[in-house]
Image 1 (cartoon, rainbow, N blue to C red):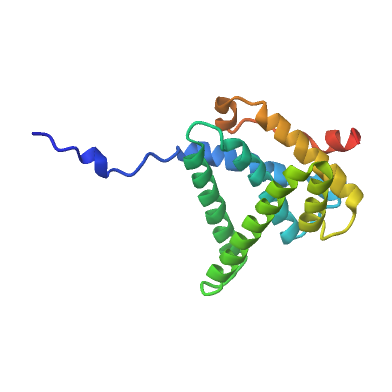
Image 2 (image 1 turned 45 degrees about the horizontal axis):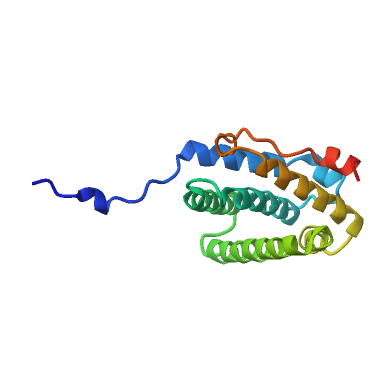
Length: 183
């Protein structure tokens, strides 16, 4: 008699290459210099973190309805956490301090994504206000308005992709310059 040992296997996790490709797409876009030059995002560790969180939120939001979206989202979030941990260690943060910093990153991530999710129910102005507060340090609502237009264009672009294109990691975000020019 054969025993059903498959019952004890861990659920399949998304392929590492898929997660790395998607995360690479997110990081590449968050590093786009136009955000810092044109949209007044502070070119600081915090400003870069905030843009990374924005783009991660955009992709996670799109992954929700995808087949296997929950597992993909979790794997992508785990990759983000590992990247943050690695970056802290590269910056020389001590082993005893890393967990506290990671907790702060987690709180920032969940706080910002909750604010962005809530803002979506309030329309463009609410999203601009949330982005102004969380990314632009409460300053320059005009630039936050452009950043909100960018986020909306990115959402529309991601929503228009089929799952295979998104999962390939070859999807592209709109250029912040193109979106800003339409304002």
